[in-house]
Amino acid sequence: MPMDDLLPLTPDPVIEFYKKNVAREAIRANLQLSVEERFNKLMRGSVCKQSKSAKRPSSSALGI
Image 1 (cartoon, rainbow, N blue to C red):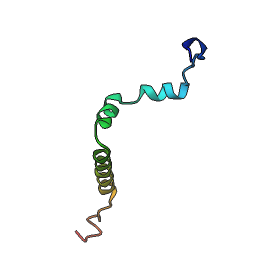
Image 2: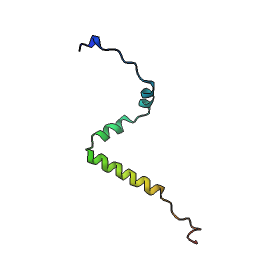
Image 3: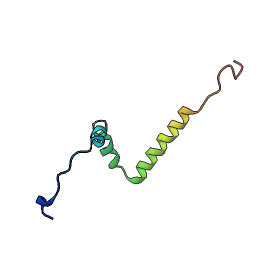
C-alpha cells in the first residue's frame, strides 16, 4: 500500500494524557527482562504489598 493512500491519524487525547505520565525508562528496562524475570519481579512486589497491608496487633491488644 503506498504511503499516499494512508489516512492521517489524529492523536487520541486520552493516550496523549497518559503518555505524559508514563516512565518510559522503566518500561524499557522491564522489557529487557525475560518473561520469567518479569513474573518474579511482579510476585516480589505483590508479596511486599501484602506484607505492608498485613495488620499487626496493637500494643493494647497484646496487653502491653
